[in-house]
Image (cartoon, rainbow, N blue to C red):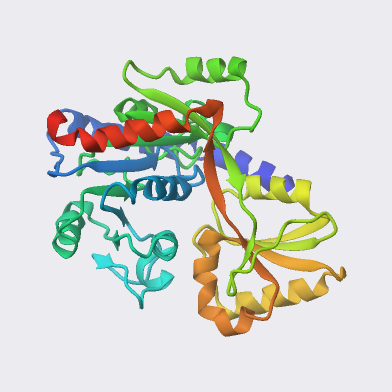
Length: 357
C-alpha cells in the first residue's frame, strides 16, 4: 500500500514532463490529421486492436478472440511489433520460433493457432508487404497494438479501455498512463470497455456511455474477464482451482489485479512473485520461484502463471516438467449478450471491404 502511494505521489511531481509529452503527441497527431505526415492503406482488410494507454487493457485476449472467430471463415494473419524480443526487423513465426525470437504475445498466438500466420515487425508499413509475400492468400490482417501507429491506416479500429482506468479519467505519461491523446478515441470504429464487473447493470452501462460519449457510428461494448480451467505448462493436463490449495502466483504482466482477485475468491491462500511486464525469465528467477514454492507449508500447493508468462518460461522445460506449474487461460466475455453483434460487425467489415473502398 505504501509503495503504491509513494509511486502515485512521485508521478504527480512529473506533471511538467507529462505536459511536455502531451504537447509532443498533440503536434504529431495534428500533422497526421492535416495529412502533412501521410498514412498508407493496403488493398485488404486491416483490423487494428489497440488502446490509448500503456498495457493492461486486454489486447492479447482480444486478438485471440478475433482469430478464433475469423479463422474458419477467412484466411487471417496477425502482425505485432514483437516487443522485447531479441531480434530486429520482420519475422514470420515457424516451428523453431521462441518468445525470444518473436516476443511473448506473438509466440502465444502461434502456439494457440499454429495454422495462422503470425508475423512481427517494428515497421508495420514494411512488414505488411513482406507478410503478404510470404502468405499471398491472406485475406485479413489483425494489427496488434497499432492504434497509435498512424503510418498504416486500418479499415476497422478497435479501441480497448480498462473499466478500472478509463481513458477519460487518465492523464498523460509519466504522471498517468496515457500514451496518446484522449481525443484519439474519435478514430475508433469500436470501443470496448474491458475488465468490467460480471454483474455490470444497465444503469452503470448508461453512465459509462455518457462519460465516453461515443460518436455517431461508433459502437460501444463491454466485456468481463473470464478464466478457463488451468492446465499444466508442459503436459497440458487440466485441474480446477480449489479452496484447499495454496498458490504461488508468478507473473510478469502489466495488470495482475484481476488475476489476484480470482485467487482471492478461489484459493486458500496465495503468494505472488511479480516481475516487470514482458520480463525475460532467467535461471536465477527459476531458482527463486522454486525456493519460494518450497517454502509454502501446505501439502496441496501449485504454481500458477499466465499464458503470456508461460511462453517465456518454456525454455526451462526440463527444469519445470516435474513441478505442479499451471497456466490459467483468460478470454473476453461480452456482456449484455452483445458478442454476436460485435462478431457480425467485424465479419461484415471484411465481407464488404471492397464495397467500402
